[in-house]
Image (cartoon, rainbow over all chains, first blue to last red; front, top):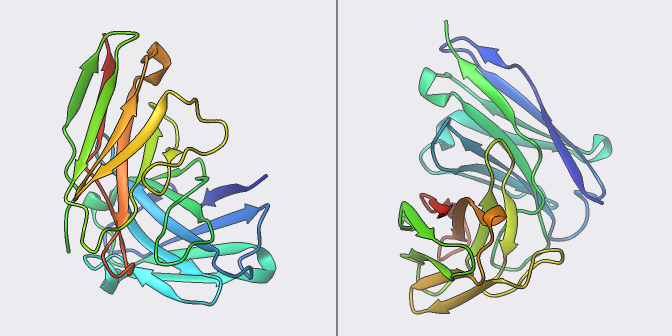
Length: 122
Length: 108
């Protein structure tokens, strides 16, 4: 059974850097084709993809947020970390991490973590 | 970049068929995925690679594709199907991921 759980601060101040950790079990990020992605959802709004890291350390970022995002993995700890710099109140959202199954030339997410709400406010 | 367009809302009565469209799929055609999200819960995959249903998803959920539009069909809608539904696809090169704006399904 694959499970993922997000952890990190629930409140950050504007201009600060957000660091979120995704801790997972039930799969290995050293398995060919596997990835872990981050997706966020502002309150009452749609899902927005942020980034993904793959078993081979390939990393992809949302073009609109690329300059602010860094995704890293620690295979030995079964963790993926997302950092987002220069946080703004518009970044207030529930942040999800999700498992990306083995696939060639495509990408999807199953299952997802429960999500963690991050509020940006002074 | 590109956008996936979904209708903001769809309403059906119990037992009827709901169809939710997702247009703007990039060419060359990429696979589309569908997620169901109930209030306060994380999204759940209900259709992958346009038409495939994960284990545990009721067979009343189905997917189809025609050109650059894909459709999620829920046959015999039940009250428990009331949720937001999102389509998702990689871009044409598989470099990044886009979600549609979501469709709120209301069961009358």
